[in-house]
Length: 165
Image (cartoon, rainbow, N blue to C red; front, side):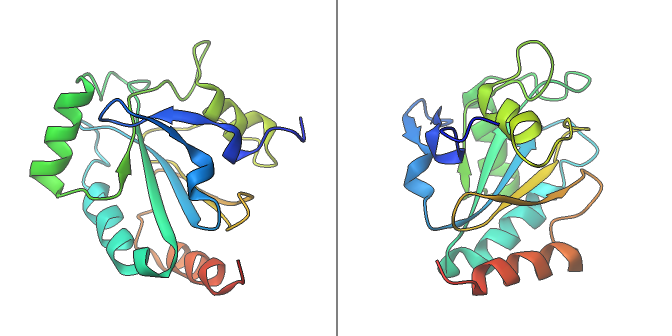
């Protein structure tokens, strides 16, 4: 693994088309999740937003990355995805432009998350979650079937929030 690359090395395009340096999230507990609007797990948006509301004032942020890698379950444009997330789920956590999370066109961020980090595992489906501590270290990975409000997820987030920055 290249020690000069970390989560804060990446600049990503927000769903509104603005370039955002992930270094702006330094010091926060992060959950990075690939999302899709037409997936059996799409209802997890509700729990992700609830999770964000519960912990946002304690230094927690969710970064949502729409991806169309699994059975074309995110076919929309960024504007359509934003509209869907806003009207159906009232999403207020940070959403980014659609990217690829696996395959030959995998985005470098997801290459880092899945291959160059200590969590060596490809993305299994939509709504796979990576939990990072306040220093940008990947500490947990939750597969798509793990709901955001499950006890194991809550326990891990609270442990990371309670750790000193």
